[in-house]
Amino acid sequence: MNDNLIQPLSGMELKHPKTYQEQLDILRLRGLVVFDERKAIEALKRLNYFRLTAYALTFKKDGIFQEGTTFETLYRHYEFDSKLRNLLSEVIEYVEIAFRSHISYELGHKYGALGYRDSANFRDHEYHNSFLSKLDYSLQESKDSFVIHYREKYNNQFPIWVAFEVLTFSNLSMLFRNLLQVDQKHITRTYYSNLDYLEVSNWLHGMTIIRNRCAHYSRLFNYKLPVRIGFRVIDRKKDISSNEIFAIIFNTKYLMTNKIIWQSWVTRLEALVSEYREVDLGYLGFKEDWHALLTT
Image (cartoon, rainbow, N blue to C red; front, side, top):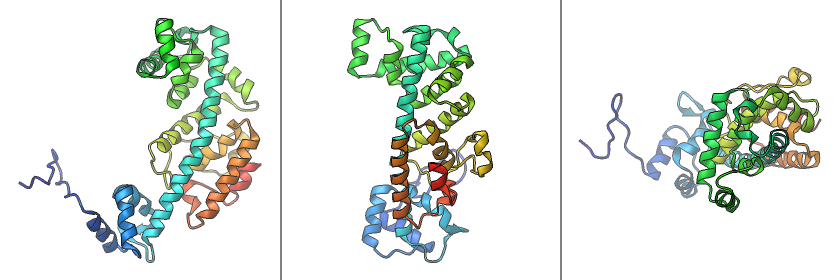
């Protein structure tokens, strides 16, 4: 038996690993045009074959590249996606930090410094216990000086404004979904007038999915969200697809309380789109009037 083969428990044998040259030859056999072999191999060395070829899906039919598709085409789409992830990370960070502040402030003043640990202040007790387990693990593993200070001086008693600084965005979204309805409504009304708390909860959940993909450098182009994003009543006739990246981008404008920062961000998004005009934004759910939708 060849040691280079891995025998799965069932099914077909796994393929041999390919050299960079062999990977490029496979792409050529499938119709991809390669003008600069040296640059192409350097890109494969840095990016990984499967990461890069994920962008090839829209340029293939029956496993063969459309005529005229070049290696540069795939690489440019990868570059666009990388820069879009960086842009999205900025606005998601803004929303995440704001919600962390809003929730810790409102719960702290209503229930006290340690009220977040009382399951009576939340809808689902099991859900709350799961949340606390994740939070306590983060606090236990944290090496941040402020966490160490409270761990040593206050015998592992962390007030809400300290504890919530180690929350992941996913756990923060999880927490908001489990707040008592009166608290969800109060936070939404106080900081995001004219929004519905159910819409906000849905948007936060969608943003955590995008945030995690950005954090792990996963592809956004031609990616379908595993959840459906809701829209305000006034936006439901705009025919925006509910499982596309643009649905999240569109609704983020309502969570960006600083409109100057939002307008600046949209301008930079517009510059990115102009730099990569060959990228079909339809694969991200963008509509032709996307700029107007984001700035109106």
